[in-house]
View (tube, rainbow, N blue to C red):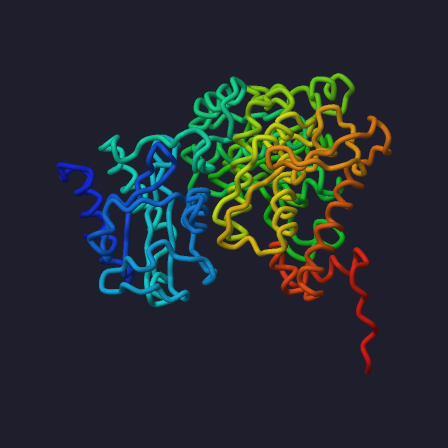
Length: 523
């Protein structure tokens, strides 16, 4: 009767706040949580306590900025229930538990579920149990049900669930690609129109523009959101194994098939399968894919009878499929079956006005990972980024911002935890981001202007232009060298500075020749 009581609260409660309170009481009966709360999203990107059980009465109305709280930030970006297992992450409710004015013990059970109304983040459902195993009996599926009820209650009162401001706390179910350009608004409208349907969708665009994010948004806003999203990189599968990988095989179907295996389509049953780089599929696999789209059937390798399978297909490519069809490398009938309604994601150079919003989002994500209070940009740094060429598009921009945060952290010789970092122009490395693509001189004089160190002198082309791979490798070596110097050669400390594990930091330092390789073991 507990779930029924929670459902009835939506129709019987006169106000959404009362409905939320009743839902939390019903949830409290099926969990060992010491504190439960519903946080409602505000227009400025903050989330405030709209209903709670187990917190101090003074907590009502308490407001948090997710960017300043790693757990809340991760929860706003999550696709579903998320359990926090890292005891080093601070709990926002420390000091607010009823009858417990002190800090919550680091080792306790904590989880959160994002609440969404019409595809936008409306708030969070949070649960805390002082017993580390206190939430072990709560299944994710049940948490999703209660979260859906809370989202419905928030919808009763628009004042408790305003849409987030652009660029603030965007979640995978919210805006697919941050930005306010006309192109991004068009894509948002197309996703909203196509998400509830089952028709196949083809996402086109250059490498690194964010095609996978569009696919995720189509899945997460669809009625299939509770079912699997299976991602397949067609270019990464050897040609001779493509059909087995996608459609499965029976035992003994070919050499090495020692057991029967279900394919990716079976794994995506009832959900969505995202076929990235679909232009790389061999013609034999294209014929099977066409049958799956037209008839809803697949035939595992070595089996005589087809199997029924129901999964929505979202595909992506950076190739011109019309040309591929004309040159005989892609089936015309499959092309027309996929080309029901294509979504074209433009390159970053055609929507530079989106770069500031993207930079702020990426900086907030890396700040949450490093435990930094926040990351800001000087005007000169944002201006340099906005003028960047970025042939690798959004992916390259993200790498640039993450690298800049690490450079600033290492340059200041302190850890990022709990600190506010300000990225300057030299942190974003103008040699990699000038619109012309030509590196600036690195040996000219430095002058201080308005708190910025600017590089003067030197003619364009004075230094040879590096390939992107060479530039990234040089930056990687520099970052690792600084980290190991700051850590006095200690791999564990260097790994923490870089946000990496000790073992990976050690192995990479050996590969880069920064520390000697271990000698042979003595027997």
